[in-house]
Length: 359
Image 1 (tube, helix red, strand yellow):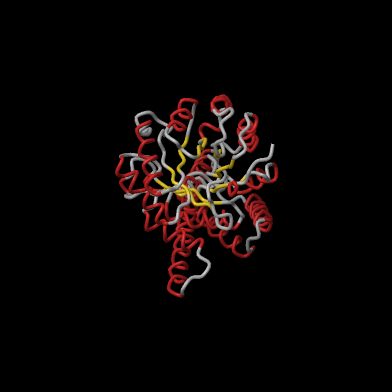
Image 2 (cartoon, helix red, strand yellow):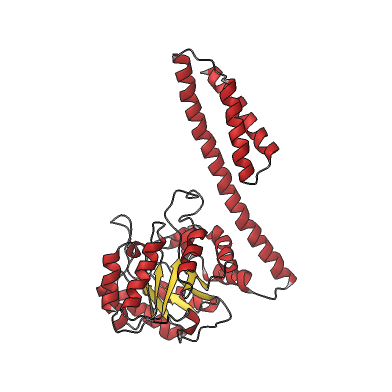
């Protein structure tokens, strides 16, 4: 069965430009949902989104407004003329979304990880030709992602796309909410080249200052579009406030990412936005470096206590030489300057010796 690319879903989507899906993380009130969706439409969105049911890690958090919000989403659809999408996590959600004329469904990361839940959704959609998008599972498992899509294919769905929203991994967790693991996206693309991929920079970044970096990378890798959370008052959002942007910020972000012909003033604004995004990421990396140095210092303190208790000399020359040699070999494979790395570890070693002598 041939899978249709997202541009061929029959929704008037521009095949030449990336698809932009935007709207609030959660539908909170009728006015907030409508104003957020109108703002997203005016900013350049092709498809409107809103979270109706919100599976949260801990009970007691806002878990979505429920069925009432579907009526607000339908009103936003009528008001703007744009198709709408929401997340479904079980067969009941599917039935309610279809009853309220939701145009596109998506399966969230916490659901994709559960084959039983995906199969329940697939069975509820058997014989129904509706577009559906599948977010990658929270854990870095491409086979699980592909398996979810195949379950939908097996019941006859042809309009299927994938959403890359990052993975819950330790690597770069201190920078991104859900590190992107771009290599896993490439692995997915090699195994399912017929599936369109939408990038979700909001859930990857977790911070609005990093949206530009992630979105630009995704577009450079040839992804088919972006899903960006936007809210009329993001700082007052009931869920995921830090990763949402207001309509003006969304418009500026999209113009910066997508505009082909910029005036000199626009170009300066784009450069400033890009620099700010890169600098934010560097600031976070620097913070991580300092936290690692602090952790290293605590280990050195324990080593000093051990040496003291067993009457061992502070400086172990052969250990030092061996460590430097290994670090230089590792740095070379990473493309780092040998002189820089040597200087860094000499400074670290000097500080370590002073600390151990003090202990």
